[in-house]
Length: 309
Image (cartoon, rainbow, N blue to C red; front, side):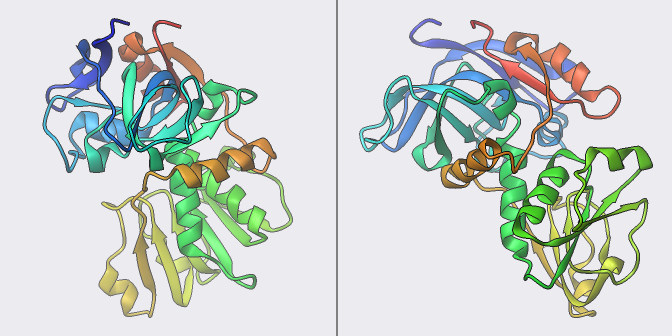
């Protein structure tokens, strides 16, 4: 890569896969509290598709937008205020594109130090590239729900990428979990555990003190009176007023950048508490093929890698 130029995946306006552009742009320079990171691997998420198609428009910045949330990379420069990272360190981060307009599908990304977690070399980059957005969403949702020892939790969308991690995190806490999936074959995607009960299609009424909704819908009938509803899909939630009439509190989780949370998640992966699926890898400059693979037969696990590695 030239010192001042890099490849990035951008959109000039919302559209189909063909709207994605791989182009050469000026490489960013880190601010005083930022880290410049060269891409090793990233991944595709539903949130990326929403931004590409215009269902979500980033709150900051203007078109063209660089897309991509997840990042595993190597530190190549640091701002003046950063003394705890060295050049060559391998790191993990999430860039909250919908909030910041700053994407990770580029050969070099600058992110705040607080968003970055240091990595050792013993964990596979293509596996960890699936972790940042789904992991932070699940981790922050479980922290928001904060179930007590005697409470039960319904996880809607338990077979999805986020839902599976929510289930694993809850079981690690010793919570009693009701996992709601759409089809019987999805039951096999979940762990076997004495604290885990499976439900297909619809959850029974009044079985849970807390709902964590990773699917986007209305699963409030599963709650007891004065329960808690934690939604992870902000545009697909039951009415706050309808829930309040039953004494149910509704919280919405907007995933936040956090290197500290990522460090905890990496530790859980290392210890085997969290498991991540294998993914098919595409170089960044084959972004159209990557999106076609991701969008066929549901959402497959797809990782992007640096085109120069």
